Image 1 (cartoon, rainbow, N blue to C red):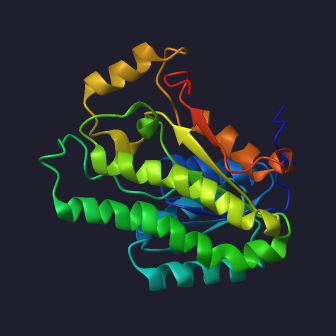
Image 2: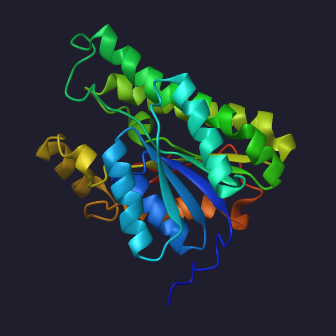
Length: 254
């Protein structure tokens, strides 16, 4: 029995980076919990196929294209999602880039640093502000930012990404204080190393490190993170804001 079927009944949610991986898993879980979802991604063909695949399961999901490096694209995406859904109750800031994996701080280029910050940090900020008018009207708005456990333990040779996700955690706290008077919650989910297409480049030794040093010693799957996102979007978490929840099988216990 699926006990989450009614958890997000009627909630209108925008999920960025929804064409694959964690974003796709979140979109499916939200729709299965009764939500109506717009997934947005820079991968135009894949986002439409992802939406079609979820629609084929009988889920209320549609797709849009967005480039988080382009402020105009962000503004247009938020407006289109709000129009298609007739409002907005939730935003999942999931989309991000890595690009700095395997490089030391000395090898990291300024161009890579700037791209990671532009998409992961500035993109999250701009998407949140673009969605604020609709979230305020909702009266029960919820923002879920995807951080990472990497800044919680200081993952090496990944500095730009680690710094960007540390910024997400800090931004989450600041936004929570700013938006609390609007009855909008803002929380961060910090997954560990998840088995998705985007982590295929990660060396086997790092995958093994995560698995062996977790309290729950197995690989982490996208569905392991979905429950935390559903909770943060739901009425069960209406008095929880500004928090970061590590979801990593006990690899990090802050």
